[in-house]
Length: 200
Image (cartoon, rainbow, N blue to C red; front, side, top):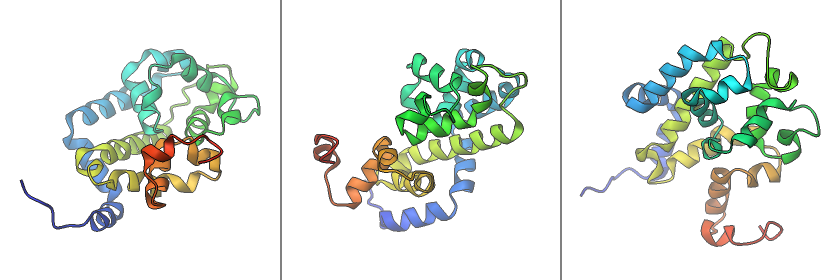
């Protein structure tokens, strides 16, 4: 067993400088990520409704993964609400939840949400495909074993996502952001997570 002589901070700085290119390389070499991205880019432009996206398991996993929502992939009612409600409406689940990830996801597919879950043309334009693919590759790269064992993946995620999160509830609704904040502040995430919301 060998011990790396490169500190996690150095690893993070190197990874952050080249993350886009490293993520693209990782996506080409990781069989599952490569397959998922290929399937998504092939199918995405034909998706015009929430139902079509939800029935296309592979594309849905890529889209959810790109927005850090892989954990809700089995919560079909939640996903459907996010895709079929106008995210700019104060009564929409995405807007009223204060969850930055839900809102970013709903905003990306707002053409569907504004029309109750359907669109006359696919909301998955070439720009959306490119954005989702890049985000998915970065997410998969950040979750890879080489980056999770020392916290580098979470730190990369934090620096990439924090600029879009402007509220306390936005930070608290994102488990990875919270873990970085807790760790950087000197708190044990397990102990801190046991506190009630107001105490946190």
